[in-house]
Image 1 (tube, rainbow, N blue to C red):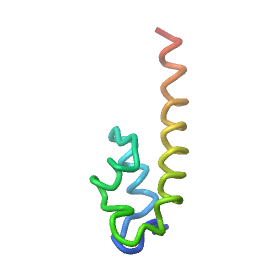
Image 2: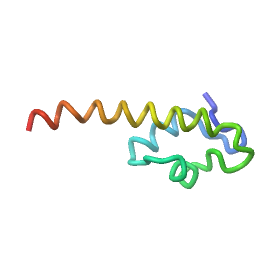
Image 3: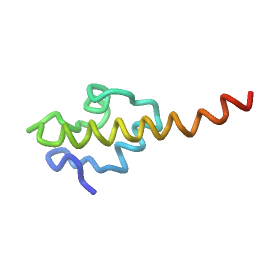
Image 4: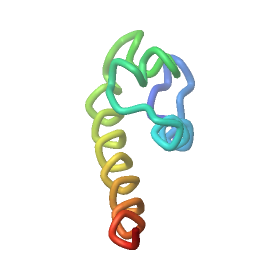
Length: 67
């Protein structure tokens, strides 16, 4: 699904950016252009960024306890 129509950024691209280490909306904007034009997507993009970041952390936690 398109999150940022102005710059053609999809939810999949945001998830890929988080997997590659993106951790803030400012960095997401620099990497993808999401939110750089009209800004109407910023709330949705930030929510997806936050949710995906939390999911990434939860996937890593069990590995930390195994060591």
